[in-house]
Length: 273
Length: 285
Image 1 (tube, rainbow over the protein chains, first blue to last red):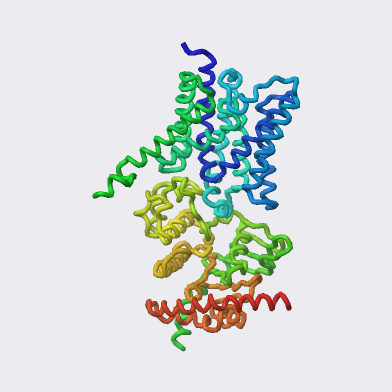
Image 2 (image 1 turned 120 degrees about the vertical axis):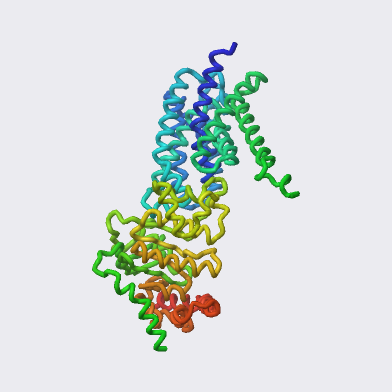
């Protein structure tokens, strides 16, 4: 029989994937993959500070990830350095700061690996409530800003000219990303969160005909990856986070292959006629 | 010569009939936009009324796009007065728009990008620009001309009071260019909306515009096409041959003559350097 902890991880993981999919689509469309990575890496600093100040870890991560995102936006406006350099600096320095801080707190016995790569055993009932409560809030807000955010993704100017306030939508989106990172950390870990955002979205791109269907498919594919990954991790005794990512990758590869072999979309079979 | 002038008078008439009493959609005076210590554009006076076509011309870097963005409120203005009619419905066709390959977006979905519209409205808008057959096509697979038409339909579906076009014929071949400009002209007649346009095609601009504003970091000259083409500032900027742009377009719609128009456009490219000098003179003076 399956243990309780496994079901909790599964339910929690599916919840995270359902939220990550639609958000991940925007990360792909807006080419923000490294931005997401940076926010995720800053989460470790959030973990360290939360432990230091003895506040809720998820709250700490959310705060620091949001702060990191806002800092990046400000630095981008100053245009001191190109964005990729800024991302590199913020991403790795916040990760390093987090690691250094954690090492200072010798009195704490924390399992660093579980934060970096996720931990099946760590998902509590409270986490599940948090994932579904927070997740619903995130999806609700995303639905509210959907039109301005999508229009701004196509063209910021166009959305602004037609009075949709894309800047506000983008700001809200960053906060939503921080929230997803905070609640997804337990399942896949800091280092792998971005993959849960991006890979299902990239997989969905192969099949979707519109942005909304792509978002729904990304949510479904992410959930499927969580199910496959967690059962795989149980079967082969592999770490849960990486197993989920590997499952997502497999789905992506299948989507690539199906694209090649589907009549009408592939190249090889049709050309002979 | 007399016949040319007469033709010009005929073209002008719809503009004269356009109700001048109506409140302006957008009114700007002494508008300026600064980035750091550098003025992108300064001293722009401009009024757009319902049913009026206003075209901005000027060499590259003369502040045309900046002016439009400031008028629309996308860019913050650093000085001057700007008043937009409250709740003004704007349809915007931006200069450069590339939809990322990763976003699945059909022409039909593009139509509802910034607002909700039903199927009938979408069909009507696509028919208006004659691309109804492309409704299910991903936008990334459209040709330059088709994409511009799709963007135009997207702006039109909002039933805008002001249609703003930033170089609407970019990436469109020459025959498509003429068709697109004729379409824009038609739209004004049908919707009675004001049109603010940036354009490089002097010969067409002069034929189909009520007011031309010639920019080069500031407003060099503005007025009806006749006034502008006759002004020394315009000639300094675009060369004296460009002054005949008006006559060439109005004289004949023939393709041969349009090829002549191309020669004019060529001259205009050539004279950018002169336009630049003009700007420097101004700065020095």
